[in-house]
Image 1: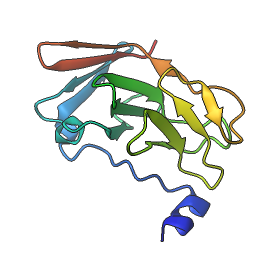
Image 2: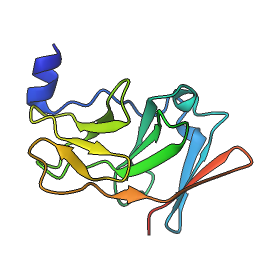
Image 3: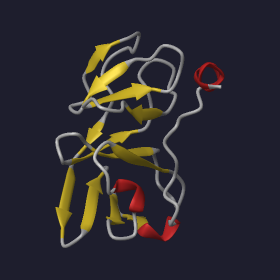
Image 4: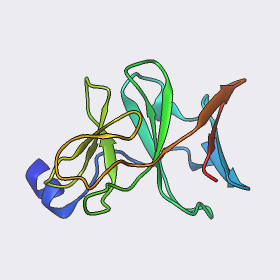
Amino acid sequence: MKILNRILGICQTKPPEDQACWRYSSGRVEIELSRARELKEMGSAIRLEGKGLPKRLLVVYGGDYKYHAFENKCSHYGRRLDPLPGKELIQCCSIGKSEFDYTGANVSGPGKGAIKPYPVEEQNGVLSVIIM
């Protein structure tokens, strides 16, 4: 089934179970970490789409114990991205398997350049992603 998912470009990262855990306004996404259960474990991630958000986002709780956010669009075919388990890398969900580090740089695969990282701030249990 994994090879079929890769051929079709179906990512493994799901939207948050509690859609009310996040909101978008004026170029800023705010995520209430206490409600985003998917971001509790190192290497976990959520994808954010809709609610007026101008671009799809991938938010990762990395192996470096920091939160990272990226435009959820591979530089190869524009498919979605997933964190790579056990590594501080992001991987395209397509068959090409382009890999990117937390700065967005392409480290392997057919990706045509970097992916876009966004600044992230955490304060009082709220994660803010600035996407302007």
